[in-house]
Length: 375
Image (cartoon, rainbow, N blue to C red):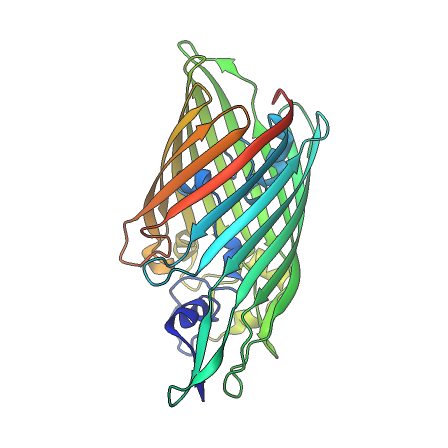
């Protein structure tokens, strides 16, 4: 009988299906396959409570809200990110990404994004502790997006994703995992008002939504299917433009997984992914109060001085009964005409360990080509 290292067990626990054989309401977080799709890659969002669906466009908009890229202020934006994962336990697990955005006309833009999650090297041993080789499990997603401005202030976007999750290993009978190859679609919208005067300052509103990871169920084990993390994000914010040098932006964001809540009899496993999206709004065993607990919220703020220096802060909250992720974030950034450097740090505020604790997230992006007016 083979066994694997503790770090790989941590990864496997993130894809374990939720089930129960009792007649009491099921509690706890909703788990899915390919949870790496939910990991926020960039440090700008990471400094504001991991929000991004309604923030202003940047080089990493494809992950948060593809519709935003039609409001990009430069023709080309490209960027890379790096975030260590479980740094308190190991130093070889990380998530990285790269993106490219091209606003090729006044009203349209396209982009491509690649995200890679490495779970490091996993040493396998037999029941006597003898070396049985090693594996390097990993997951990745490649995204292509298109955004079109339907008016001066509103755009919609669509993305197509190729997903691969390779956690394969040959365990005991019935425990072998096979690689996953699948696809998903995002549909998004973004509204950014024109700048208006409010007495002592100017301001503008921002609203956004993204229905992400719409796709079929997948299978790590033959005959057993799991949902991927289809989710809905809604957000809104306001920019306080105090003068030509000082801007304060505030944003709030709500997220809900569009995946069936685990039922006492496990019947949610027989639901198709389309029906699962619609049933997820009213299938919690505990009723409406439990449905509300499945919604996470985050608050974020950004202070920008002279379009060059940024300070950020945020807070993320998830119900104690649905995962109990709660944390504060801090961040900062520096911007030149073409270069953007952003850093963020997470401060955990719950009893549940966070894989980004004591880790510094890093993003680097470039603004190139023609300068566009966002309106």
